[in-house]
Image (cartoon, rainbow, N blue to C red; front, top):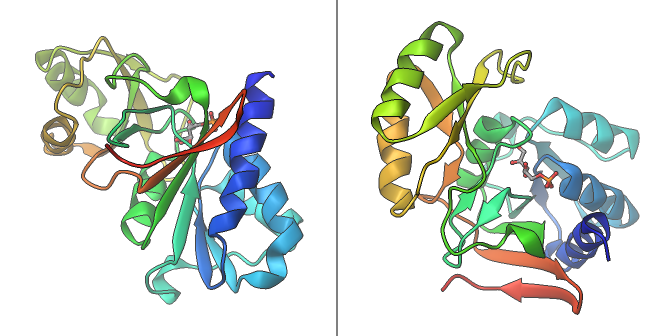
Length: 219
Ligand code: 5RP
């Protein structure tokens, strides 16, 4: 099976967690499959809160209501993909650049169900370059601080986030202590969000594998 088929498998299995209420919807190719499956059970839910303009557009195309998080209170469940997950379900996210809204929705959700193909499960985070959303005027300053932490930041040129900011993709980081590193990077002036999701990681990881969808609980 190719990676896209494995993503589809994980996306379909996430429907099991859709029991009603208002749900959070992430961003990316795996979530796009999830949105398509969600359309088949849309009568079950009151609506969604979306983490990006791209997901909002796809949800609306399916006639699924998209609500403002300020009007919903906490969400029942959040479904989103990841670029990497370790066995504790600490994640790297933001490959699609939607990390800030994703982190807000993850924080506002009672349960975070991460969906991914099997290649995303790793022993240690950091092989995937870590996305960091930065206020544009702080780009060079933040890059210098990230170098001091041992990383090699690369500006994602030509890309602007839905919030009007830029992304630095940080290569060569060994993320041995994800919570500490999340706090350290978030503390740099000019950083909006780091793509490490450890302070609020996933509660459940559904992996698409050759043997079918597999549910992983945090170690
Ligand atoms: C977007 C994300 C995505 O969840 C992550 O990049 C995974 O994407 P895909 O499902 O396309 O592999 O964090 O900001």
